[in-house]
Image (cartoon, rainbow, N blue to C red; front, top):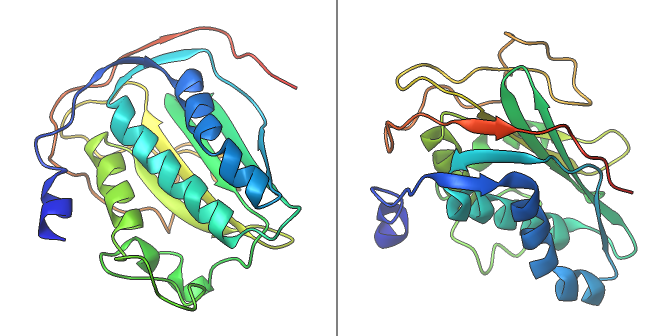
Length: 212
């Protein structure tokens, strides 16, 4: 476990990557598992956005969130992935139609060695997955948080500043489906930032492309 945590330090490799292609690639990795579980993954939008980031680490976050969504989704349901660019932020959300998250755990599930009560068996996990996701986002001066979805299920949202200033706190802005506005802090988003990297993020942007 110590090694798993220590692997985060000093291993971030920032390079320009296509965000939309990265998301599609991660979803493709789950095609067989989704078929086995009789689940569909719907990518509601795709951004033509090239961002300087550690694509491997952000991909690790998406794999963790999608894996959790598959784990807690009932057969025949849909997992939805949304992407957006607004107020200088890249946003991605993963929504499932599962059992949701106990309200008192919406923040603590990101703590180390904590597993939700919805994981009944508590087998096969260390409770480090979401904690590592948070550290990766904080290293990019971003944030990740969880919400319960109206009608059942959960939503995990992440945001990364498209251009960040080293040492500055992460910007905040409302994601689609929330009541937040630019400049309003999300009460469930982690505070502060992780000093793993001091490099700024840069971006080249093209108009958003919507896919069916």
